[in-house]
Image 1 (cartoon, helix red, strand yellow):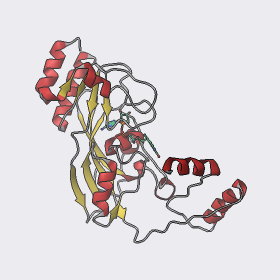
Image 2: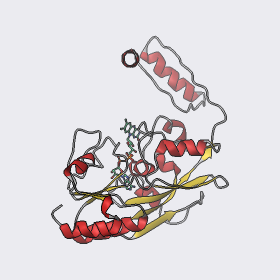
Image 3: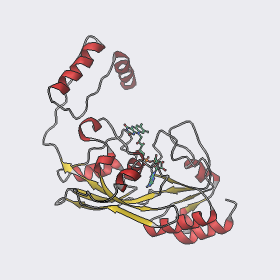
Length: 265
Ligand SMILES: Cc1cc2nc3c(=O)[nH]c(=O)nc-3n(C[C@H](O)[C@H](O)[C@H](O)COP(=O)(O)OP(=O)(O)OC[C@H]3O[C@@H](n4cnc5c(N)ncnc54)[C@H](O)[C@@H]3O)c2cc1C
């Protein structure tokens, strides 16, 4: 990075080992699953909200762009630092702060892996439904920033429907706290809905309060075979018209089945 004094201030803020500037390190934070890539000038790995605040203040004062990054699994190019500057890697924010079984909610840091969180709440008979396909790698902060959904969205809704509140560090370093554990939170502007899905453009999520629901007592998987697409499509409509809402409904044609069988062969 050109600005050596900024690097040195960042090192003071988060520790020397948490500021990466070598090319081989920068490459690891320059891409996502899209074919695009762009090198950041430095990668900063903060460990708490105060450190995020300091980093954002320094970058803001220097006019340097900041791109937050969870696990980099998005398929839209949104964690690629296309304007250079800093990548703010959130993987040290990995604590589940509280699972509140009395109030059916949890408070987590933004870098917690989605599937790990789901297993932890399921062990307590609770359920966090949003299931983007990348859930074994993606972070809850990344899910909230992209308003991720998945096959279970049909029955249970998407990430936005489970965000009760959050803490965010704004671009100039101010901390914004929105919502909380209250389920019936009806007064004032609905800032939660504004910030969920903002893809890192409005600030950095550091802490999230997420709604949980009771884990379904049982689950059944069914397979139905149809001779043609029209009959399969009509059955989907008939199932919904019969007021049956399955957790997921997946349609696979012969080509998809052949592909899976060849992958497993
Ligand atoms: C194989 C595959 C399948 C997928 N399937 C689905 C699917 O079924 N449904 C679906 O909705 N999505 C799907 N996705 C996309 C999915 O939403 C994202 O992969 C995931 O939510 C991103 O999480 P992440 O931690 O990897 O975030 P990243 O990819 O690192 O970041 C995603 C965006 O969030 C921002 N961001 C990350 N962390 C923060 C933070 N703490 N504060 C502010 N901004 C932040 C980044 O700047 C970026 O704009 C899929 C992705 C893959 C690779």
